Length: 228
Image (cartoon, rainbow, N blue to C red; front, side):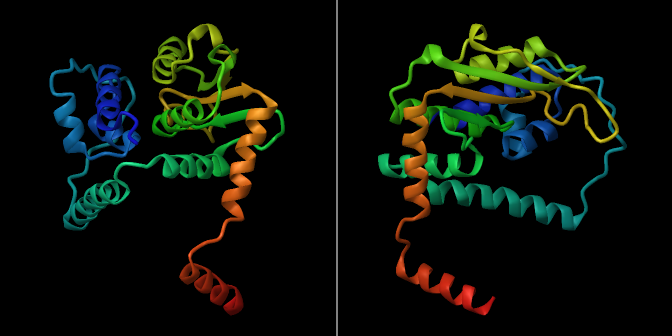
């Protein structure tokens, strides 16, 4: 089962370009090639942001080989994954929550600055669980100096969680250890206060982490443990 795929990436690329982001930054943010971004945003009016960049370096042969390899493996990865079945979607979401989701009993929480992760998680949550949309909350972590209104509207449109259900944002103060423009749209956290839903999810996580793996994989893992 898909969940908007390239259409979503194109929409996000166009929004980011209109906000003044470079093709390189958009490609890096979305995990796609610069060539794809260039095609998607070719008719979008562009005004460079005020962020300062150093002199651009023309890629050498090694850099070009690296870029070509990355682009090729991205295509290969998409082809290998393909369209998810119902069960594969369930397992993938459980794995995602096992790595990124909150484990405290009573609340489903999922923080992530990658919009693809958030879209996938919410599609999974809404598909497999009986969710009351009015109880979903979103809290935004955003560095000072960045556009809070634009970021809030961006995440509201992306997640389907209206601004009226956004809680007070956290504004991080810029400092020598913080890159102010690292995440132009900030890092949102989705919250859903429901003990049963959280326990259902943790049941899936437990099942995933204790499941029987293919025999060849199990044997390889055992050999690795012995060798260590």
